[in-house]
Amino acid sequence: MSQAGIINLSSQSGVVDSVTGSNGVTASPTTGNVVVSGVNATTSSVGVASFNSANFTVNGSGQVSISAVPVSEGGTGDSTLTANSVLIGNGTSAVKFAGPSATVGQVLQSAGLSSTPAYSTATYPLTTTVNRLLYSSATNTVSELVSTGNGTLVTSSTGIPSILGGPGTTGNILQSNAAAAPSFSTATYPSTAGTSGKILVSDGTNIVSSTPTFPNASATSGKFIRSDGTNWIASTPTLPTSAGTSGKVLQSDGTNYVESTATFPSTATGTGTILRANGTNWVATTATYPTTTTAFQLLASTAASVIGEITAGATGTVLTGVSGAVPAFSATPALTSITLSGGTALSTYVEGTFTPTVDGTVPGSTGYVYQVGTYTKIGRMVFYSIDVSVSSATGTGTLIIAGLPFTVITVANSIEQMSVRVTNLTWPAGGTMLTASPLGGTTTISITSSGSAIAGGFLQIANTAFVIKSTGFYFT
Image (cartoon, helix red, strand yellow):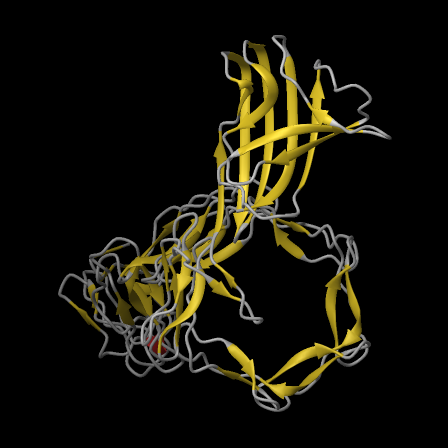
């Protein structure tokens, strides 16, 4: 038995027949014999284990002390070992030691074929949770990444990883968020391709397949997409495939859309200018026009190359010109005369009303239901209309209508045209027609009766209710 590197020798008859040690060390034969001292000790080469004399010493009591056993002889090449360290082979040289590390969680790592393994600077968790990923949560610190159901691995703007939980709604897609971590869209997208020819559009909440379809193949060169009321289809007419001449616009030639012959301005000119033809092309006017107009206003050149509004005048006013100024409405002019091409002067035109009266040549008192009279005077000719309803009359003799607006001309054989209708009065005997006759030099009318083979006579007034209506004209 041995203690602390001391080998105990056992013998019989003073002969060493075995050598044991706590580590089962054996020695290869070398020169020299083990010398054992004792009462019965003898020296023999039979059954004696020989050791390299450099690796042991024997004291006076027969105890052998072993020094560091070389690797070549099955030892470590070192007499002491570091507690909690890992032994590292070093060829035929003494073993090397890795660790121990003062930091919990560091792991032993290879340093390559020609270098000694060493503990990592980074630390790792002592235990892990199922289904979690390991990542570097800080410099030289490996930790678990907490997982979530149906999640996606994303990173923040600073590169920190995380598991983005699933949106819980079918059809959401992962989208970038500029400098922030990606996230799932609020809107959903179709999970199937849908009907051929339909495209993705927004319904205001989600992205869905369009109701109309779109062509999925190219049509004839120059055609464009248009709606047929249900779907989007290729047009029948074509459009030009090149830009063409500067300033020309597209117009129909009855079959397709082609460039116009005339050009149009490519930039806007001054505010208020409009387009006009110069005989070849369309150009902007120099004059400007108002952007808006007021109802019933007239347009006029209010300044050089400026078209503006003329404020409408009141009812009955007329537009008059003023030399060097904008025309304006003024009060109705009082015309003194209008000279016609033949030299005849038309001095007046007047419209108005008057109040006709009815009485006899022997005046009395007349009651009325109504009295209406109107006239139009053009030059010397007066057109009138009379409508009188009488309720009673005390006058006697020939019936006289008075109150004409102008005095009747006094001239022999003057021509007047007047019609009259009378109700509820007795006509002169034999009369078949009544005529209203103006009395020259007065403002009165008498009513005469005429008929076949009679001398005629004047209509007489009566104290009864009657109506007289008369229209016609006379000269003043």
